[in-house]
Length: 272
Ligand SMILES: Nc1ncnc2c1ncn2[C@@H]1O[C@H](COP(=O)(O)OP(=O)(O)O)[C@@H](O)[C@H]1O
Ligand SMILES: [Mg+2]
Image (cartoon, rainbow, N blue to C red):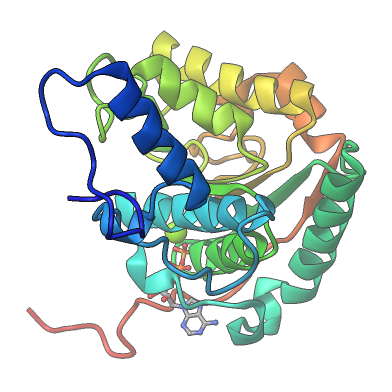
């Protein structure tokens, strides 16, 4: 096969060639402005559908959106991917979430620490916390923030040796969730009790502490109260995080309480 567009000349034969033959061939290739890629069987690059190749921010933004989607798929929460602020009820505080997201995007552009680092979204089971938090993530990912979704209990599982998907090492799990621009940490201290292991406590404190120290925003949902209520056996978030870290978290946080009935409960209890 000739590698030039000039079909009147052929390439030197395979095997031994005198240097003169080779250099004459190379001169012809150069005269033709190099090898004709179309004749080498190299598939052409697909046309960019959303921007110029030179703009690296385009493929980067696509990669971030894909990472967000994959984190939702890993959590088996695909059905929440369609939620946008517009779909939320007033009780899910879409305006508070929207304003906070605006401030995060501004801070990211200026490479500055966001004025308010955390969003705390407490509420009863089924009140719509996860839907609100994922709509925030969906909107954030579309605006170019590297956003990830993670259930707190899943993080604790993945941090154990050889327990994370996609061959991720435990250290890679920590790195990813500490370094992303915005983390949606769902069900903070869910499935934990007062005797949560030292491992769970240490890992949780480390993740939250590292994100605060680096100035990276995090949105938390939880159906726990911050502190144990008088007369109640239910644990508070403070029992896991400790008073010092909880006050650090609260010192730069918006509170978006989500109050509402359990949306999953059937209107009429099933009789069985
Ligand atoms: N604004 C909404 N409109 C319609 N359905 C919603 C809305 N918010 C939540 N849901 C649905 O209600 C159910 C419970 O919401 P979810 O966010 O999972 O609650 P929580 O995380 O507080 O337990 C889910 O099936 C979710 O899809
Ligand atoms: Mg939920």
